[in-house]
Structures are given as C-alpha cells and as structure tokens.
Length: 99
Image: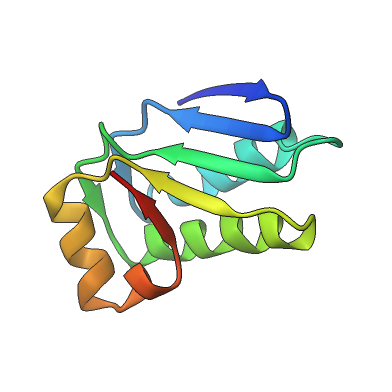
C-alpha cells in the first residue's frame, strides 16, 4: 500500500486485494495516515483485483472517516470486476466512482 498526502486529500494506491485478510490492516494504516488537515480520500482502484464483504466494509469505514471531516471518498479507476461487486451490492450509489 502506498499513501501520499496532497492538499486536503490522502491518495491511496497499490492495493491488490481488499479482503478479510487485508481490510483491517488497510483501515488501521489509513487511520494513522489520515491526519489533521486532510478531509478527502482518493482510493486508486486500478490495481485492485478483488473485494469481498470485509473489503466493502473497509471502504464504508473510509467513507465515514472522510465524511466526518466534511470530505468524501472517491474510488478512482476501478476494474470492471470491482465495479460489478459495487453494482451488485448497490454501493455504486453510495461511493463516488471516477473513471
């Protein structure tokens, strides 16, 4: 996982799967990286191959974290397989998805 802060946005990238085995680690790392002054999270999904229910829960937690600071979570460049999971769970209506 790679994180980079720019202005008010935390950019997260290089995550290949968001599953029960990795979701807690990602949430913990982002909690530490999401410091004062940051309000938005851009989650680069271009390398993300697989998301399970725990991974979806982690995304919802990230969104709540950003919303609490008046910001938002954006899912950037998700693969078709990830978009399909978001659509099946209707979370595509909850998250901002940027192609």
